[in-house]
Length: 400
Image (tube, rainbow, N blue to C red; front, side, top):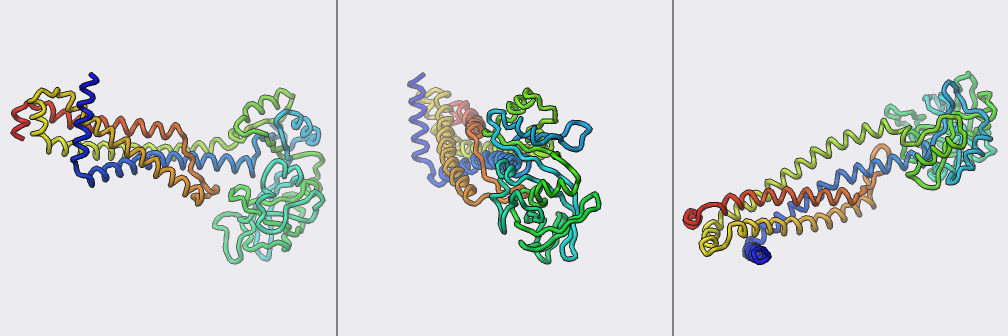
């Protein structure tokens, strides 16, 4: 068996060595590009998920969200509840928010948006919005006449929001009027503008929790409490621990709050990915089949002579299978190099999606799966034409 394999390897190498170098290089390049295509879209899908999760944790929801009990509009006793939550090992920050729908007015423009009342120091320990100020400064605990808002809400002068809330050109230092749902109106000075590239955040505005509580007549109450954990990815465990501490409010992980939207998007991406993968593998089958078929047809007489001198049919077939394995292996290696270059480039210059910049995330399992599927279809595509020619009787093969 080993001797037969050595003969097959010798025949395969001689065929490659004496073959057309250009055709070989082109085939390897096609295999490399197919490999890149097999891992590109999955890496982008993983990148979208990663970006969405990061945006949710860093700007919108934190790792865990505590909401009012069923039938209640607000969480009561927020100060005591914060202390109880922060006693849980691994919880590094909590931030109560008062959420209210308001209408903002600025120089003849008006738009509806969400206003959050926050405790600035708590917000800094839980989210990263304060790190993304493009103009001005974030709120301080004592601010009662100041507001900060997202870049989309602030807008640009002379440009409408395209369906998104926009005041068309608010600048730091300008004054905006805010009409609350209880018919009270307040005027605030714009202290800062932030840009997180998360639509849900960049279309919102923030004032201090003391200011929002005074306007709405609340005391030690909040619409929601965001919870920041020390380690991402262990939200379910922290949720169970919070509930074991006797938290009576509704407790959700950020994935539970965003799962529906993200799952629908991922399902759509996966359908596209499945179609793309099938097309790529079909192309690989066709390319390898044609190359090996032409190769075997051009060497029918040689195959007949080999059989005539006693070379077993299976050894001949195996020689072509080894050629396919060589071409696929070199193509896969070239594909890995191309994919690494592509990943490095897109990491430096990420794709800009509506939810933020997307960096490709290449998972080892996706690479191994792509290599395995590429080898499987290539061997099958190479075996069939080799088997068809090698099984011909000696005289027919020699006659060509």
